[in-house]
Image (cartoon, rainbow, N blue to C red; front, side, top):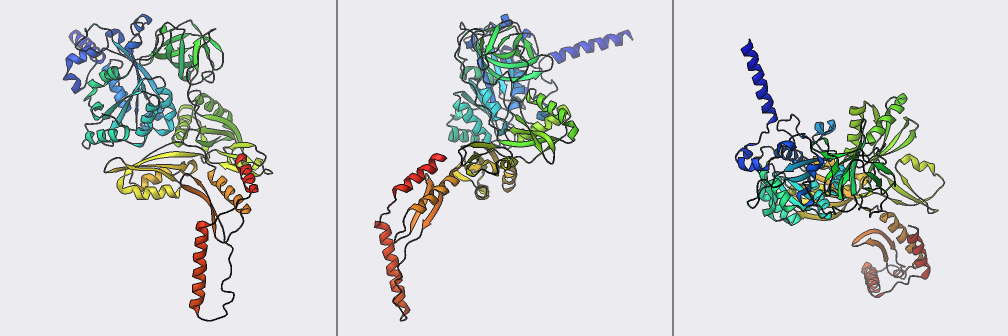
Length: 639
């Protein structure tokens, strides 16, 4: 028995060692020398403690901040897992695929909803360097891939100097790939293309390289070929990050200045802010202030995400981490705000554009007596999702509830699901609507989020209406171009671009009214393309052009005198005519003296009159009175 007990103790010791030891993919095993040189040291192992003195070893030139951007389901979360394992930040076989997807809804749907940050330590050894050289500090941000969460992507990119653009080797460039590329390009980030899933039987990396060249002018030789699932090609990703992405700019000896990237509420710690240190260093106990609100706070805790909250007591220039400062509500932590040393004046950093709510829906408790519980649940959930707007409203049918603004339909659906899963709330939601802007005859304007609100101004005359529109990007197989164009035309779409990505796929860009796409547009598009279409959209200007154009041509018609020829009055934007009125010609009855006789005589007279009117239309002139210009100016100025 004693021997059996000793054997069991020995097995447990071996098991503990096996769990603690990092394991690697097949491709990694083939290059043991490279792996050994690239792994983090024991003090930086998975969930290991990191001290402030260790962070001091990483000046800005040894820091790289990068994000992973991709279309939905192109493998970016799996790639993030492999990079965390490769650097020893987490252990392989940690039992939780897509480690950075924390929410239950993310795991059930297989999508990323909330951008997540993780700090990794990696030793990049070249032939000219000693293996004892300090390692690099890499801040990785895994971003959402769906269009509704592009706000999260734009916030994440503000903290980065580069991005991994992940493209599925079988599916190729998709709609959100294009949107994310231009987000990164406009932010002046270094972009590293990563062609993922090369292990799939239908993978065609050469075709994807051609697409990247044609669409983005990316050199095919710059693309990295990887398989995040098998680990193939991953050994070239982090060296590319270090060599191709610049270090963060900033002044180490300047007063501390940092950009507030995100915030969420923790019941035990309070508001936790994610920040990027632009200048100086932030230490526990420092006094900081908000450039937006002017409020001052004391730094109670500061550290990095490695991969969970890891206190370090200090953050240095170029590093990304978290700050706990005693804020009581996330409303105090304004995304894009500049936090700086208290009692000092600094130049605020460029902030983010505010979230633009595209869809509004009413939320009501299934049981009217649960209103307070629903109010509490919405308040807690919005602490972790600042992109939702909430106002109270009352319905004759449903009682008291809330009118909530969302970034899109999926965002709305995810918010409802989180209310039910995380807070047990049972809600009734109304049909989603889009916001319109109405202008009344007295010059006042109002944004209407609920059609019922129009009844509150029965005595006012509506002079103009603005409709929200979007620029839609649609990528489809070539054989489905006809049905897709017909669908967009039926939804009042205006074609902006029609090109071919390659011999098999086409790209369409349309300006569409938001109202036409929020309910069933994507489902219909998927149906007519056998499920092969990808769809993305971005906000466009609001359109009142049809209404204004109609009013202008109608007004002009009243002031122009009739001529002997027909006059066509058109309102156009560029080459597109948006409104038209016809001023009929004055007609002389050339058949008045024909009291019978041959019909050919009458036909000759009519043809002669027709030719004369054509000639007059070519050489004739139309006199527009001064009063017409005055009236047109009144109409245009009132808009």
